[in-house]
Image (tube, rainbow over all chains, first blue to last red; front, side, top):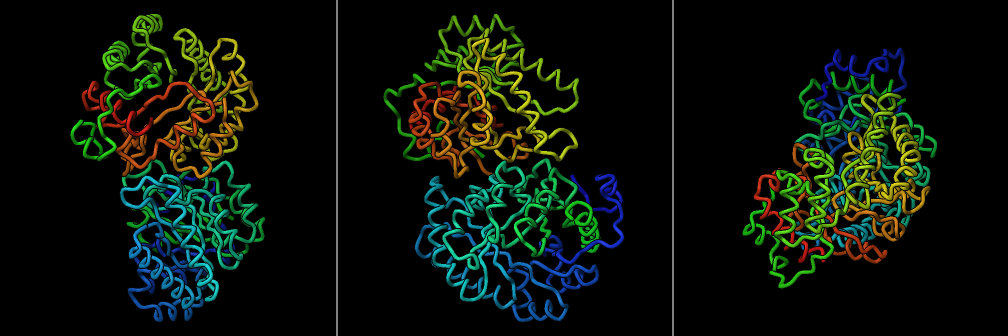
Amino acid sequence: MSTVDASTVDSAVGTVERPTADPDLSRLSLNQKTTNSWGVAQAVDGCVRAGVPAIGLWREPVQEIGLEQAHKLVRDAGLRVSSLCRGGFLTAPEPSARRRALDDNRLAIDEAATLGAPCLVLVVGGLPEGSRDLPAARALVADALAELAPYAGERGVRLALEPLHPMYCADRAVLSTLAQALDLAEAYPVEQVGVVVDTFHLWWDPAVFEQIRRAGDRIASFQVCDFNLPIPADALLARGMMGDGVIDFRPFREAVDATGYTGDIEVEIFNADVWAADPDEVIATMIRRYANLVL
Amino acid sequence: MSTVDASTVDSAVGTVERPTADPDLSRLSLNQKTTNSWGVAQAVDGCVRAGVPAIGLWREPVQEIGLEQAHKLVRDAGLRVSSLCRGGFLTAPEPSARRRALDDNRLAIDEAATLGAPCLVLVVGGLPEGSRDLPAARALVADALAELAPYAGERGVRLALEPLHPMYCADRAVLSTLAQALDLAEAYPVEQVGVVVDTFHLWWDPAVFEQIRRAGDRIASFQVCDFNLPIPADALLARGMMGDGVIDFRPFREAVDATGYTGDIEVEIFNADVWAADPDEVIATMIRRYANLVL
């Protein structure tokens, strides 16, 4: 397994781990899941200490300290909020569960607006319990989007549809490719519905660069992390620090830039070893790897 | 985890596990990996006992008893060979490793011809050790195919390109979608290069039914098994008995049939619980599930 201890990490990626005198961090964002043991206040402080100018927030830690307090912390620190994670889980077919899901997504949109987050990331949900009807689950997502998109648009928040790696199709997201996300998004004004380009989820897709070109100004969020092997027992934790896995990042960054995207590049890592490491060290490694492997 | 014990299995799938008086098994094939503890002779006997008319063979157990002996066993039992698994692993860039891989694939083609297998399944290989260059690995596969396709065609064996689930892209197959497999195959005569439609690998793909239509007479093999959750520690063993996972099989079978495919429907399961069960019981369950969920 990977480690984020600086010395072993250096040898792991060899010459790409060269020190960078003055890396341009102006577009780097720490998704707070990467420093999972920290609350919002600690993550904000960590970004400031390290010179990271933006942060991707999660609803649960924001709710722990309260929405207004989280907003104040981020604003006083001079950080941008690159995204709020996450809404979605829109595939429950029962009317009451569906109403609860839509209500919760409207609340998440309100939270994103208060926090000044330009987009709310949507993980759309997997197959309903006991169901094998993938087309029906996808139709439920499309229907929910029709309800949520205008609501988001009115509040200046963009819904960011995130296609997830196909290994999560059954239990997390029936949205698996960028093409599929764009098919959904293109029914709405570009400021209402965009897509997330996440290297972990999309790196394997033979059509991905063609679809990034197609995405154009639909790209609402660009997230990077590596795909590690072997896939751990909890498949959600297969995300790795850039350089520890199999992904070639620069072609993705260049393709996303070529669409005209000038937004933040968010590093979001779910990984037991990363989470067990000292978060300041994780941020230091993230900065080096970002400079050497993504820029 | 799933079990193939007949009684629990019955309750697991509820009403779909109804007894079928006289199921049509004429297109059913046992891929011998499903009864992994059996050698060729036992698997052939097991098929005969259960009335399964076809078998998918693997090279290693065939080599254990010798090619001619395997051929004699299958022929004397009156079974069809639906496929030989497998060739491929064509992504090593070093000239000597590449030469060895091509030589081994030519040998596998010869074996398929001797066994009367209509196709040799190709698992194309993952990223070379230490490489992150996915386009280069894919180019190596395309180059190897140019060398192997005419050789296979001359021997009456069809190469069957198998797109694997994207979770195996790094370590098993840089070929991940049916569209990608067809893009490769269509450069060759239809009798030289076809594709494998395997429900486990393709069920999640939003474009799969469109691509099955496109495939037409390129379908060289149709394999079924379920996608089980959670993904086990050894991700290769996530394949499950039909009915134990999340796949809706009938739409796949109907889509494949609609192309004009009248060949065998092969059940190939890698699963620790299935492998630990009594193989005759596994075949009995396979027949019931095939009748109730696939036909």
